[in-house]
Amino acid sequence: MEAQRKNIILVDDSITNLTVGKNILIEKYNIFTVPSGEKLFNILERIIPDLILLDIEMPQMDGYEVIKRLKASKRTAEVPVIFLTARSDTSSELEGLSLGAIDYISKPFSPPLLLKRIDLHLLVESQKKQLQDYNDNLQAMVLAKTQTILQMQNSLLNTVANLVENRDEITGGHIERTQNYLKVLLDNLEKQEIYQEEIHSWDMEFLLQSAQLHDLGKISIKDSILLKPGKLDPEEFEEMKKHTIFGVKIIEEIEKTTPESSFLKHAKIFAGTHHEKWDGTGYPYGLKEDNIPLQGRLMAIADVYDALISVRPYKKSFSHEEALKIIREGKGTQFDPILTELFLSISDEFANISGQS
Image (tube, rainbow, N blue to C red):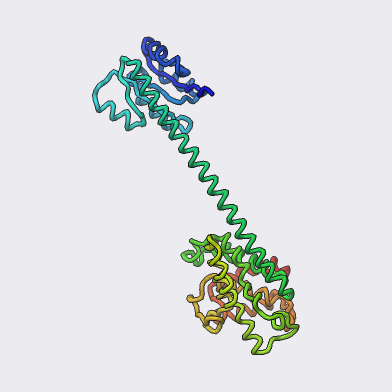
């Protein structure tokens, strides 16, 4: 298949030079000849060439002014320009190159040299375009692959979260609601510029998806405890508390067999620290204040609020107002004081999610 002929515009105020140049190039290229910079910009409204051969010394608008205008326009900035000149001083050549010209060709033209120089530069431009196309395609492929990985990761998280929730029928809808509470907290952290240094590097999509696994360890809790239709005795409660450690261990096992497991980083923190308390009396690690990861402090509020407004075998559901009172009383003991104030200021959004509004 014959290669498509390239389009070249030759700009020169000399009719002789236009005629000679066209005769040299016409057999190989589509040649458009124009006698001035003004006429060049007229023709550029209809066609963008593969190359412009531009005379420097022209009346009204010289070659330097023309190339400045070409490079200032997004439409023509990438069109390669070769200057044509009878000058032989290096300062003129340097000025042209600094303005964006790719080469200089001296007049009068040497036909073999003119053809060779044009062939060379068009080849370079073609290779640059091929490389750019390759890079664009590569970026598209990487993006598509990344989206596939994200979908696989989200599918894994959703599947595992559903396994947890389907086993623990008592807390139906808890995982989805806490995920929504968490999003509200995160949105308002950003709006109010709270804990910005800690959250600026978080991938919020990963974070919210990972929050689904905060109760993952309940998979390892015996049915006789997890599904007990009543309040747990002290020994049973100690066993239930182990779901935090079990969750961390399960996620660590998943990490060992998953090539790309960075998306589980937040999940492990949620699973292991959402029952820690600000005053250090929580479990499983007894962490205190800022030693509790921010993810765990956020989930503590979302988790407790949902537990309070939900029916449990050992308690009735509390109203939204009662839940607010309990969380307010836990400020500085169970909950991060700053996050508690944030929660109280946006509690209506929690009520909307929980159906308590």
